Length: 410
Image 1: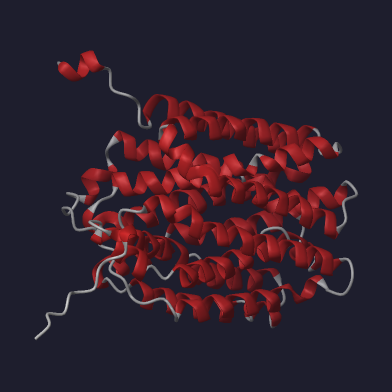
Image 2 (image 1 turned 135 degrees about the horizontal axis):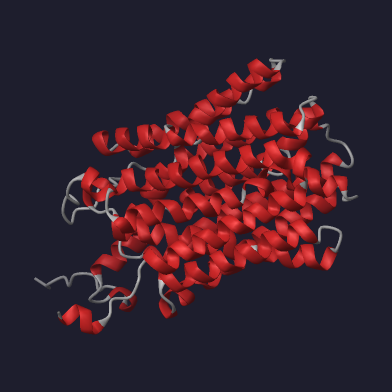
C-alpha cells in the first residue's frame, strides 16, 4: 500500500508554528470593525457634543461640568469591568453587554430636558461607554500574542472610523443635518459596534507567565506612579481641545465642513504614524518616543491657543495629533504589557484608562470649562501646554530611565 505523505507546510510558516497559528486565527476584520464603529462614535461625540450642548442652551461652565462628569465615570467603570473580566475571563461577554447598553443609553438624550436630567443621562452613558474599549484592547493583544507590533495595523481602523464620522457629520451640519439629531446618530453607530462585538470569539486575556505579584505592592512602585501621572497629564492637556476646539473654531469663523476637516487632519496624521510606528518602535526606545511626544504637546497647545486665526499654524498643530495622542497611546499599550503581567493585565489596562481618560479627562474638561469665559482660550491652552511640560519632566526623571552600567555592576 502506498504510504500517504502528510501535507507539507507552506514555506512561509516552516519551523514557525506559533506564527502560523496566530496568522490563521487572528480575526483581523472583526477586531478592526469593532474599533471602526467605536471610534466613529467618538468622532461623532468629541467634535460635536459640545456644539450639541451649546445648541441645547448650556453655557461654557455647564458644558465643562457635563464633559468632566462623563470623564469621571472612567475612574470607576474600567476598574470595575476590568475586575469582572479578570475574575470571569469572559471579556467578550462583558464587551457585548456594555456595547448594547451604550447604544441604548444615547436614546435617553432624545427624551430628557433640563440640566439635572442631562447630568444623569451623561453618567448612565459614561458608565457603559467607558467599559468596552479597555477590555477590547486586552482581547486584541491576547489574539496578537507575541505579535504586538501588529496592534497599530488593527487600531488604525478606529482612526479611519473617526475620520469618516467627523467629515460626514461636519459636512451634513452645513447642509441637511440638525445638531439635535446627534444622539440618534450615536445610537446607530453603537448598534454597529454591538454587532461587531457579537462576531469576535471569546479569548482569554490572562497572560500565563506568572501571576505578577501583589497588585497593591505593584501600584506603589515609582515607575507605576510615574506611568499614571504622565498619561493623566497628557490627557488633561487635551481637555480644552476635546471640550471647546469646535466652539473655538466656530467663534473664529470656521464652518462645519472646515471644522470636520481640521479634526480629521489630526487623525489622518495619526493613521500615517500607525502605519510606520512598528519601524519607529524597533529603532527608538519607548522612553525616547514618549519624551518627544510630550514635548510636541507643549508646542501644539501653544500654537492652538495663540494662533487660531492662522490657518497654516492650525494645520501644523493638528498634524501634531499623531504625537500627542497616537504615539503616546501606543507607548502606553506597550508599557502596560511590560508593567502588568499575569492576572494583572486586565486591571493594568483599566488603570491606564482611569488615570488618563478618567482623572485626566475630568480635570481637563473641568478647568477648561471653568476658565474658558473668565480667562479666555489663550490662557486655557497655555495651561494645557504647562501640563504637557510637566509630563515631559516626569518621563525624563522616572519613566524607563536607562540604568548606568557602572551602577548595574555594583
